[in-house]
Amino acid sequence: MVCIYCGNETQVVNSRPQKRLNQIWRRRQCSGCGAVFTTEESAHLSTSLAVRRQNGPVSPFSRDKLFLSLLKALGHRTTPVEDAGALTATIVAQLLQNTPKAVLDPSDIAKTALETLQRFDTAAAVQYQAYHKD
Image (cartoon, rainbow, N blue to C red; front, side, top):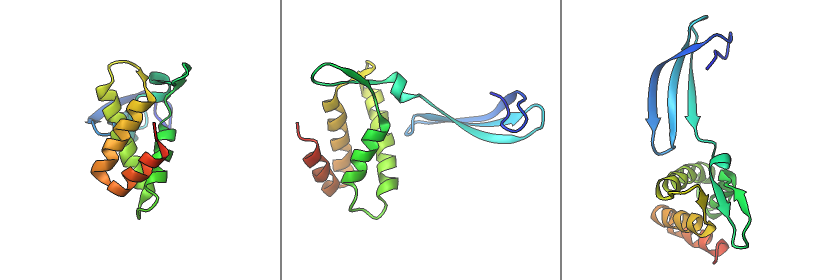
């Protein structure tokens, strides 16, 4: 990777995996100007995962759609945006861990989201289930 300030090559001086977020945090230092900055590396899910609908078409996985459906269910909480973001990261990590193939079924996504919500907030789980009836 090149330096964000001067464009010279950088070197990784510290690296830490973040399992829950399925990311890698890296501290980099520029060999030219000596600047130090942080990067986060994660998989591009819309090109790595797909969702197969019941009628056959396959579409890219959208983390944003999952986030918005969780946000709607968590609307009664004091911090719905933060909660939905954290739960989305947890659900995506579970889906990646439990799915041996790159094509997901919408019911698997809904089931994983519902199970996660039930452990986090029962009222939100009921709200989510009302919007995602099979």
